Every structure is written in C-alpha cells, then in structure tokens.
Amino acid sequence: MIQLKSAREIEIMAQGGRILAATVETLRAAVKPGITTGQLDEIAESFIRSHEGATPAFKGLYGFPGSICASVNSEIVHGIPSKRRVLAEGDIISIDVGVGYKGYFTDSATTVAVGAISPETQRLLDVTQKSLAAGIAAAQPGNHIGDIGAAVQAVVEAAGYSVVRDLVGHGIGVQFHEDPQVPNYGKPKRREKLVPGLTIAIEPMVNIGGPATRTLKDKWTIVTVDGSLSAHFEHTIAMTDTGARVLTAA
Ligand code: MG
Ligand code: MG
Image (cartoon, rainbow, N blue to C red):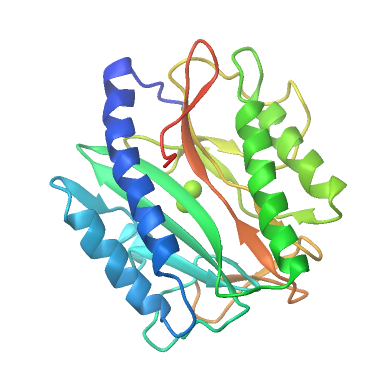
C-alpha cells in the first residue's frame, strides 16, 4: 500500500535528505587510492551521528552490518564495507547510504572514481548519472512509475549498456522500503500514477555488459555475472504539483 506524505512529513524528509547529501559529498571527497571501504563506513557513521537526531539507516537494516553499502567495480550493490578492502587507482566504488531523521528515511547513492579511471569507465558513470536525471525529469504529475523506468532505460540502452532488472527503486518514508516498486525499465503510462505526496527512491544500476546478477557467498554482495563494471546513482524525490522535488541533492 502506498503511503502518501503530507507537506510536513516531506519537510522532515528534506531535512534528513540535506544531512544525507552532505554525507554523500563527504564520502565522495574521502575516496582515494589506499583507503578501505571500512574506513569510508566509519566516516559515514560518525558524520551522520554528528547531526542531532540523525542515524545511519542501513546499520542493522535486515541485519546489514554497515552504515554504507560499498560496491567496487563489478559489484552492483550491497557490498559489505571492510577494513581489508583497499581501493586502488582505477577502481570505481558505488556508495549507497541512508539516513533516519525524526522518524523518516531518505536514501541516496553515488559512484566515485578512485584516482584516474579509463575513458570507458568514466562513460559508464556519466551515462548512469544521466539516466538518473532522465528518470527524475520524467517524474511529472500525471505521469506514471513506468515513465520513470522508460526514461532511465532509454538513456542506458542508447549508450549500449544494460539496466539491472533484478533490483529496483522503491517508495520510502516511514519505512526504508515502501510501495511502490520503481523499476529502471518499463513503458510510459504503466504502473502507479505519480501524485503529489508520493516519495520514492529512483536508483538506476547500470552494467557495461549484460544485466544478469548473482549474489556472493557473503549473502549480501550482488555482482554482474559477466564480471563487467556496474554503476549506481540514486536520489530520494517527493512528487509535488509541479514535478519532482529532489530531497537528497547537494
Ligand atoms: Mg540506496
Ligand atoms: Mg534505495
């Protein structure tokens, strides 16, 4: 069941979203060759907790041990941060992080280059970010969830990449994962209608190779089956009368 949010609830989510945006910026700036994903996790947790009333939403969510998901190269999402995982020049790291604030959640993800990366890898990041922007732009009153997925998919497939289908965006607010599901593929005018008060996380996961995924033995980390690189960008948005308000933008 979809829980629409009042203007007051969306203001609280925007406040949490500002803390989350600052967290993401702090993490982007901290990524460099030699740092471990465990160190990034500590930075995220202490930065979030330095804001009164803010908590790292992922910590303990479904039993997840970290405050961030840290997914390197062919890891798509849900990588467990570790002090033994050292980032190297040329890697990419997808950092997914959520904040709880005054009873409401926000969710955001970004993919960051570790030092210098190849032009092909940079293109993956650019296309994935562009696909998120297209999805947000398609979130107009009167449109449907399918318009968002269609817009994301069009950008990704025009670039010759593939959209991950096994994982989707989601409603968010009182619960971290709420209805509706927000696939990164689909057809315009399909699925739920976008109405004011709807709060959703739009989060394209894009692979250079095929869309197939598998889960590693740690039971969390989801990787591309073909070993190709994968990127992930995400924002939490609220539907208003005039379009999407991005709650997690810097
Ligand atoms: Mg997320
Ligand atoms: Mg999400």
